[in-house]
View 1 (cartoon, rainbow, N blue to C red):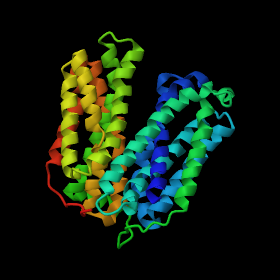
View 2 (tube, rainbow, N blue to C red):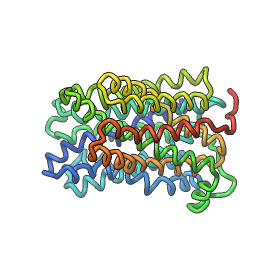
View 3 (cartoon, rainbow, N blue to C red):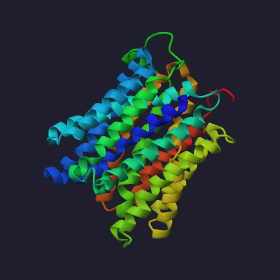
View 4 (spheres, one colour):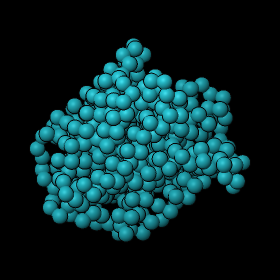
Length: 382
């Protein structure tokens, strides 16, 4: 029952990913430029850079469960306002920023608290499955943004129609998490921002944070550039989207759900190595620049990218579980790589490098493969 409530919290984390697809509808509603409309996902993402480390410190001081409840509470408020009124653009951005802050707290608290509610040896498996559940939340939230406008009850609300549903789900998750009794692993000394950042002096943690930064950047590169790559082969927009980013994120979700089963027969560290290798091969296939190899690359990359986050996160936390909240804050801060790394690939695309621009995610995964080969502390046996 404990893991079910946490899994629901992971499901609603995916709502933040719907802000990208929502941008087009908001652009039309407010008559915005593309840059201004892109502020929706940007405000969500930038919150991770601002609130992750403070969130890790706060989780260590007040407890991960309380931070999880704070995140869910903020998200309920963020979804409630546009559910009740049609906000101005500035108010909408404020709500999206609050959603980003709340989702940051969910990530910071949710990833390590899964260790507290898991039986010994099951943390990596449960975290992989939880990330799969988050993927389901991302996919269903994205679909709901467009599908809900066809439902009679919400048709008058237009693009705002999905917000009441998001709000109700988050409220349910809040109630379920609030009823849990959790024995949390805690640090002996209350941490501070300085002590959290000092963890980066230890190579194992600095390498892991950089790994998360590059992984998220590579994933955003795939979501951003797969469609135009396939469109360049003559595929119509709908087919390019279907066989590009849609297929990639579907495989990402399937890979995470299957990952939980794989981890019953394979160690987290070996699974991390296999995932990094598949992701690297997928990127190389995309660089070959043909339609067939691109489809192969999408498949390999989707499966390879799937379990990098849960494996790298859980392996790193096992090094020092009593500092789990602070480590979670540092690694969630690295999600900001999704805002920066794609700029490099975008520059290469603008410079007409074509498929060779996929060298950016290839370099990211070469690094991940390299750090996967390092040894480390072994997690407790089941």
